[in-house]
Image 1 (spheres, rainbow, N blue to C red):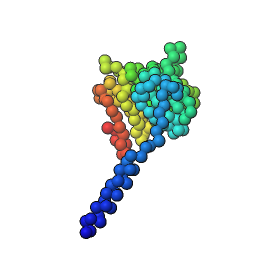
Image 2: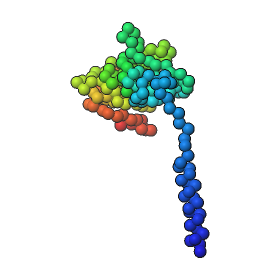
Image 3: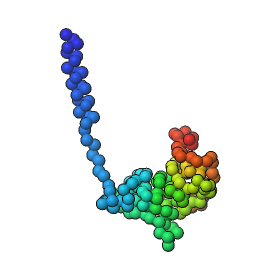
Length: 182
């Protein structure tokens, strides 16, 4: 008899759990009709100011919740992003936005001037495809590329950097809670 009473309770609990699993989450989709520069988003990042940044094959997109600002390469402007095919975007520990590209390497976006600064990385025959960016507790930026793993250290409070290359052909980089780079 106790088993018969337990069965309806278990069925009821299972059904209520199934109902929770079928609830719809409130998603919204942003497309080129909304101002996104291109439909294939390769990376996303929300910065400390709440902006959403979308890396695409046709530029870097900043979304403020209402409108997009698109940053593209301009051959006449050396302070524009180095190329349009953006592979990854990452906010660094100092609030800088680090932008990886498909063939030209790494840029850093200076918020105060709305300009990009190219970071020279020594690429080998495999090119400069940036696959992943991370930062460690010491403020170093780590970029995994087809030509190796690069550490970018800020030399001073300005935008001078020291670049060091490790290993060949790194597809990912991560920093754990103890500051270890993987």
